[in-house]
Length: 264
Image (tube, rainbow, N blue to C red):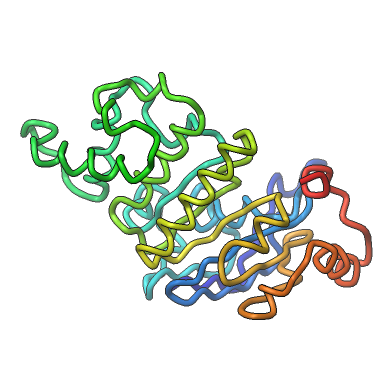
């Protein structure tokens, strides 16, 4: 479903702030793979997702999605293939629009826009049914402005919007990091249900090693712009946090220095 071949990216090249973010990353995902990504600060986790999404142009290499070379496509051109949920709950929705209007925008992703009436009656019924599955009481608040929702409600809505049209690839960039532990667990459980029920292919960046081990069928660890560890299947299921820390020390030659990951 996704093939990243020798992708490199350097920010501020030729200046005192030069930063090699990705150094020849190679990654292949089969359809249905749910991959969690961990690593220290500046490892290249979010940069990799941004390269796939087209936020920044790659310096070299290729990115192929379901047989389509998207390496040089703009971010808007890639949007019809991808679903994205960001760390900030404010980024994935339009705050001044109603819940049903946000869902309507997501439902029309990749389609042309006309001057017909915005949301049909049958659409509202479908959105209400979808929201009921979130178990957050949003099904009775279709006309509520999204800006009035809590962070957890908004993130759950963003997740629903990102997967409404079954994207070829779902990108989750620390999408529970800004939530309290109880709400984060609810959103993660919802993520797992949606990904499994729709058999989506997904990449999830997380700073929580327990979540990285528990979720998905595959785990990769990044360090200084490279993938240094890739584990899946039964071997992944038997992992513990101490195993990840030990593996990081073996491969990187130093201890993991990331308070967020260690404290989680």
